[in-house]
Image 1 (cartoon, rainbow, N blue to C red):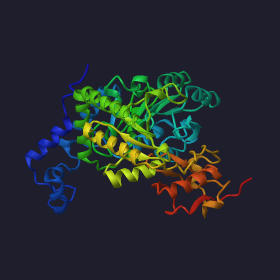
Image 2: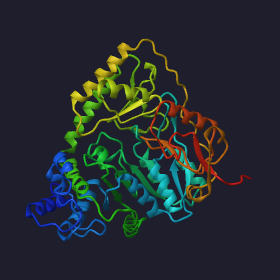
Image 3: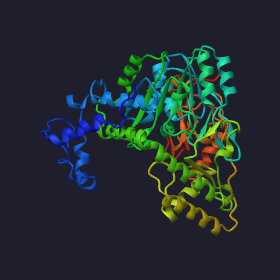
Image 4: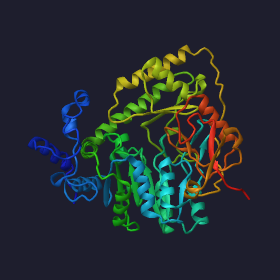
Amino acid sequence: MKLNQNRTPLFDALKKYIDDQPTPFHVPGHKQGRGILELRDYIGEMALKMDVNGMNDLDYFNNPSGVILESEKLYADAFGSDEAFFLVNGTTSGVQAMILSTCDPGDEIIIPRNAHRSTLSGLILSGAKPVYVQPEINKQLGVAMGVTTESISKAIEEHPNAKAVFIINPTYYGYASNIGEIVKLAHRNNMAVLVDEAHGAHMYFHRDFPLTAMAAGADMSASSVHKTGGSLTQSSILLLNSSRISKDRVRKVLDLIHTSSASYLLMCSLDIARKQLVVNGKAMLSNILELSNWAREEINKICNVYAFGQELVGSPGCFDFDDTKLGINVANLGYTGFEMENKLRDEYNIQIELADIYNILNIISLGDRREDLEKLIFALRDISLKNSGKSFKNNIPIPNFTETRFYPREAFYSPKKSIELEKAIGMISGEVIMAYPPGIPIICMGEVITKEIIDYLKELKEQKCHIQGNSDPKLEYINVLDIKMH
């Protein structure tokens, strides 16, 4: 029986607590904002009154039996899963939980190499061994796409004892693999399917999006409601729909990695976002799809600018596409994506989601307005008109993913030494280095460092890209495994 999705059990309970005006002798120590007046005066008293801790009438995050549990059941109903669990450390904790719930130390798991950094941390924590599948590369755009069913099939054939297949649905840029066929293939081989849907929470509430993990029959999915569903930053949901994975194990894993002091602001935002998506999501998403496609069409009228979209469907690694991911190739304007990001912010006061060597990416979501997109279109048109034959000076493609010599957990616990980046060719990386966003590792710990990886890292440094994971902030040195190679 469908549940009443107009309800917000947790939010209602918190409002009642505030209305009752109890005298608080519990944490947090600011006591409804009275202990941090500068913050209260800026963000408002009500936000700080909502910042409370677990108690009987507000339920307990780590072992919910009241209003939090009710809210999680509403999520499961809305997303079509058996169980749902609130996450307050983003989808990062959801990805870690999926791997830890499925794999024991030494188990193999099939994973696209362009998975988010949280996947690597899940491998380190669990001791699982990755079987990397190389994503397709679109050379024109210079980005990694999805994986093909054929590449997953080959990995399953070569690793028949793998416990799970891990899929990204969709990628940061909006590409979706054929998740329906991949789920069938994995299940025929008795493997669970885990799905990173960090950028797909909205897809559950409108038919004009790629197939979702739960609709495809996947076993687990982690979804960033805060990215595209309207909740506050850091709030996500973990979905379980499987007889292969124990609910009790999932709960025990979450107890290991979760805080015991979850933010009620974050959880209430999840409660309200779910209600909005179910009740108003179809209409709101219809609007942003219309805006996204209108903007894409207008941008593609601008000289030397290319906003990519549905025309990519059918190309390798792109079975389907999420139109709300407005990726724009700016290479023919003579700018790198990083230069364009800075130019848009400094000269037009527009902040995009991410940049790479060739592209910028804009996320069009529930709160966007036509006038916001008009500003972006005007800026791109203005830049194009002012372009005086500037040539694109960079032509370094994203490097091929390289050979794995040590599994992530082995590499994490191995001795390391620091060496000049230029002298690290052929050595084994002792750290994970990535541009953030998108947070996809350029080199993982345990992988062989190649010249093309070093050249690419140097290019990112020159472009003043935000690089994470490196011990040396200037990336003049890199940590490598201090071992004898045979």
